[in-house]
Length: 194
Image (cartoon, helix red, strand yellow):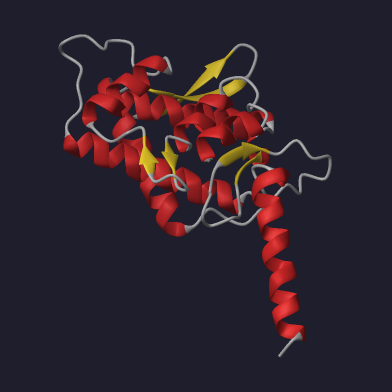
């Protein structure tokens, strides 16, 4: 079902869409992972224009794959915090800071946009750093707080909240929102019959 979810939400603006797609490489509901192998990781990073040199010298092993998956899940937890403006959970913060260190992220002054994070590492670490730089860019331009994950624990799909009040909770009102309302109705009905 969640394979359909990607079409149920509006893409995030600009390169922030790359972060949304990265988080959605794991379809929680269908239990499928687009990053199942190191080769899948290299292919995904290359297709997202985060890894330039996907030639014979650039590759990933199990350690790089585990690192990328940890970053993905830390980003998912960070997006969950965007619902209420909560601080980034400590464990997620530790993973993201470690990834930034591995990528050797440095601030670069740009003529138009001020200071922006950019990776100086190469390979997969640099590509993950490029992803984190996109997060930094989105934080600077104000779009980051609208990127969230569905509050339905069986879904957790990343979506861009376009609601005026920035109060979106579900990736799709028609699917996950409807499920939540039906559960609440059943719970109220069960309580009233006891």
